[in-house]
Each structure stands twice: as C-alpha cells, then as structure tokens.
Length: 350
Image (cartoon, rainbow, N blue to C red; front, side, top):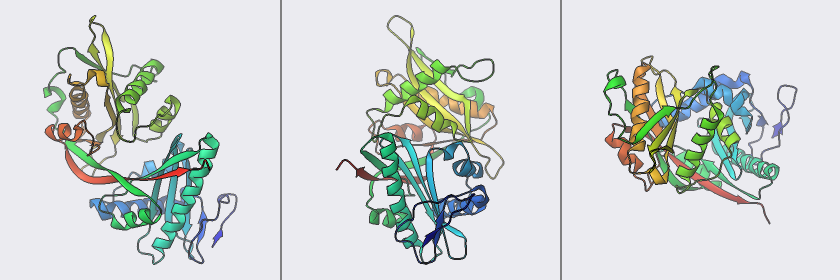
C-alpha cells in the first residue's frame, strides 16, 4: 500500500491494514461525483432514497466545512476512490467520524478497518493540538446498517443511543392558522443589522440558551461560541433569519430569555419543494412547562408555510427523559429513518 503525493494531492499518513495495491490521498473537488455516489449508495440502502445534498458534500471537501476536518480517500488499484473517511474536530474532547465504503468491493472490510484506524490517529493528533488528553469518537450509522455496525464493533466502538429522523408535512393554510404562544410567552427572530448580519448579542444569547438547555442531556459537552457559530455557518442551508429566540415574562413583568431554535433550509425534494429543518431547539430548565417549545415549533411550521415549503424535519433523542419525541409525534411528526450513536473513548494521558 502506498500514498500518493503531488501538488494537488498532498501526502498523508499511511493507513494500516490496507489491501495490497490500494493507495490513499485526500479528496479534491474532482472527486465530488464519486463522493456523492458513495454517500448516496449508503443512504439508498437504508432510507430508500439516494438523494444527498451535493452542495453540502462540496463544502465538506473544499469549503468552510472542510476547515475543521481531516479526510482520506481509499483508492483501488484502478485509481477509483472506494472509501472516504472524515474526522471532524467539532470541539475539545469531541471528534465526529463519518465513513463510507463501496460495499461492492471484496476488500470493503479491510478498507474500513484501515480508515477507522487512520481516523483514530487523527483524533489523537487533534487532541494534542487542543492540548487535551482525551476525546470521544462519535459515529452515526443507520440503525439497520449491520455491516457498518460490525466494522464499528471491530474498531472498538459501542452503541449508546438512537436518533429518529422525523418529518412533518406543512400545508399553506398553516401560515396563519396555528395556535399563538401561551400568555406570557413571546418569540422573535434573531435581530439583524441593516446589512442583514445578525446582532452579536442575540447570537450569544442563542448559544447561551442552547448550552444551558442541553447541559443535563445525554452526551452534552461545552462548545465555545466561535466554534458553535462557525460550525452552523458551514451548512449550505444556513440562514440567519431561521434563528429564533423565546422569552417568558419574569416576576417583574420583564421578558426573560427562555429558549432558542436554530433552523436551516432543506434542499428541494422530488416535487420541487424546499423544506425547513430544526437543527437545535432548547428550552431553559427554569422555563419548561410553559409552552415555549411548542411555540417555537409552531413558529417554524408557520414560517415554512409562508415560504411555500412542504415539510419541517428534525432529529430527536429517542431515550431523552424530556419526552420530546412524544411532543413531536403529537404535533404531526413521523419517523422517516433512525440513526445511532456509536462511541469510542480515547485517553492519551498515559
């Protein structure tokens, strides 16, 4: 096994346990069609649809979303990329891992083994740069992907959680017909300057609300404000006017920040309609039980209807003690497919 190196493909460390004759290199834009095909085949096998966001993949390879990622392609003896791993330095102590391998090749398992081992080495290097001695590797296979689960188990990962991916249809009439927030609850979008850029204090308030809302949830971790904003801006569907803040009346009648929601745009479906997606929704523990979450959800549904969209998607922790999945189901969301969280804890202190 060798590593290619030229001006366009800089050298990368040699992954162990690669099949004889295979090479490794970093991805470039010329690989985009192949990478779309790899991710699309993975999705088709487990959701029934091969449709993926080409623009998002392009951003991961050579855009803002690539800056916090280390990536490697496994290339077969004929020069075709057959595997792709992305190791995302998401936050201190948090390393996201995504792997796609062409299942039609006889060497698929050996390629996966080599790529996961390479990914672990990159996580260690990232941790050293961050001056931390431990990190959690976090992979998200489809719940029905038994092959990927076997590869993860062999690489030392364990399953920890399930995450239903849910969608709710939106009708035009919902632009004006949905219930108003309860008395004492108010909503507004993140405020913007005249040039359309958001007010910094509002962004900081969104971050504060989400950090405080999730600190008692599974797998919660601290993410700095700059990392939070940069990561969300990487999404091609990012729009500042899809960020919301919620407030409740305090004892003195003054509004108190109570929650936040960050939304994005979903690409057009087969019918030619865009959708809205809820990346995050959080309610501060002191404001729970006052209808804040439902008010934020209704606001996004109404906003989607006003924009001519036909659906709102989200992800939910099926094991969350908050019972969020029950709330979503009661408001019309249904599960399309399920992802899982698989973790591997790395400790480099010794």
